[in-house]
Length: 182
Image 1 (tube, helix red, strand yellow):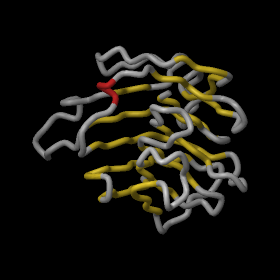
Image 2 (tube, rainbow, N blue to C red):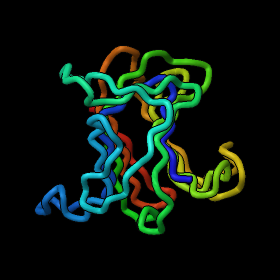
Image 3 (tube, helix red, strand yellow):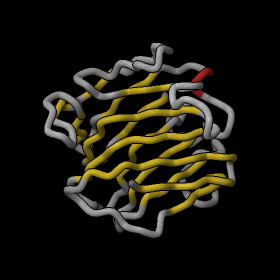
Image 4 (cartoon, rainbow, N blue to C red):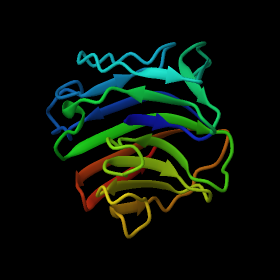
């Protein structure tokens, strides 16, 4: 399933789109846009609406009520539809806002596009227990260890709890990725 699993985080916006040229409009080729404004509806125009499970609607980084979701880190997620359109070609950009409540022993996973559950066949973004932002691209080998994923990159600057960050991952290919914070 295409799931978004957030481990003890708050997320406000999730956007996915193929990499844009400098002269293009940001909405050109926009695949997904989830403003998290009280529901998990896709406002990209593609209608890939999600189904929230256990999440709580909370204020966003500006204090606007019902404009972000809180995920408890145990079993909260948003389940997005299985659709081959959601397996886009590279390059691909994923951007979102998040605030971590804690940095735990387990990695905080923001996004997982695992089309075969627990097979790690897609893209995932996370922050590890040390606060480093990472991205992975799984090869469908049944695990997320370095032996089973195609690529993994970690950001050198660690994030902290209680602060809103804008996370962006640009995936040029299965072995060429860039990460940005703020």
